[in-house]
Image (cartoon, rainbow, N blue to C red; front, side):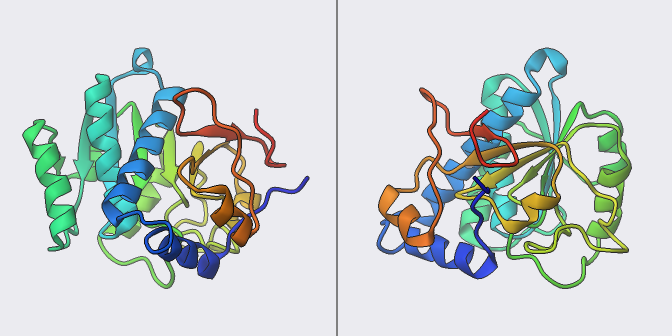
Length: 236
């Protein structure tokens, strides 16, 4: 059975539907997404492997997922730090930032230095809606992620990758292959180019909505908000 995926238009439509007929708010969806990411990090990088988690955050919803994940990781006992160079003025992101500040989670300005002391990195820079050119200051950040030996978990899409075609053929991100990918709601077509550990975080999607968009909601265990799947979409 081939892994069923959602392209960019379908993924955007699904998000809108979750917030309309699904009755979810964007805050709820971001909270559930960030919780899923934090559980994946906990699964692949338990605390005994090192507490220092560096979260690279972009200016959009993918970045918001990263901010939520950082908060949960702090409560799990990790020591997250956040690189957040492009902060939107939107109230939602300001509240998420304040929540981290109240937990004394540091915001760092020097990504290369922070990366040197990290045990694990969360790539929450760009998600499935990314297109076009990677703009400053993110080219150097993505290149550093591509070159580092520190394990990287990508949120929904490795930053700079095209949702359909995967990594760019040249330039920024062409050699970026994170160790872990957390697909939110449903996998995107780029997963066919991904070779690491793959998790799905979409336990909140109802069967009715999943059927409408032509994908399956995997079977989640117990309290888990994530499920690890193989290339064929089967649960591992």
